[in-house]
Amino acid sequence: MYQFLTKNGTVVAFVVGVAISVIGFFMISNGLAEFNGMPKDERATTTIFDFILKAAIGLAIICAVIALVFGILQMFTNPKSSLKIIIGLAVIAVLFLIFFNTATIETEGSIFTKIQEDNISENVNRYITASLKTTLVLALGAVAAFAFSELRNLFK
Image (tube, rainbow, N blue to C red):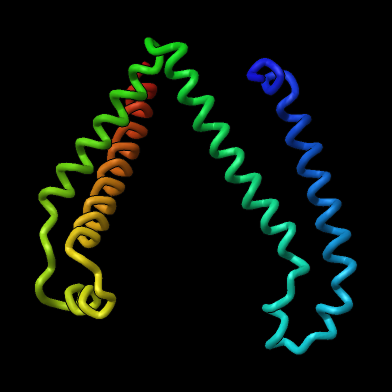
């Protein structure tokens, strides 16, 4: 399967995309007169766009699953080159756990009021805080790595 997708994956994806687009075009064009005749407040109940939306969501899910499966397969078939990725994921997980366990719960101010209004639990609040802090640290790390690599290339 991997060899087939390596050789023909782009063609298969293009043909499937064109086929879904053509089917969706005909389905939408057949229901367009009915859609235009509907009052504006009832247009949200139409189903002429359902196929194309469900197909796009389905294709995105299929692609994500295939990417995940092949990534895991590659990791097990070539563990030596996957070591950097595994270490990177472990660092991200440790960073997230540190931020999760050190997250403070807001008890006053506008943020606390919003948390009370939306009934956000303490764990969800800690999860959101840890996610935001982890994202911020990773973004700053990416900017620092970019700046370092550009400075290094400047002096080469």
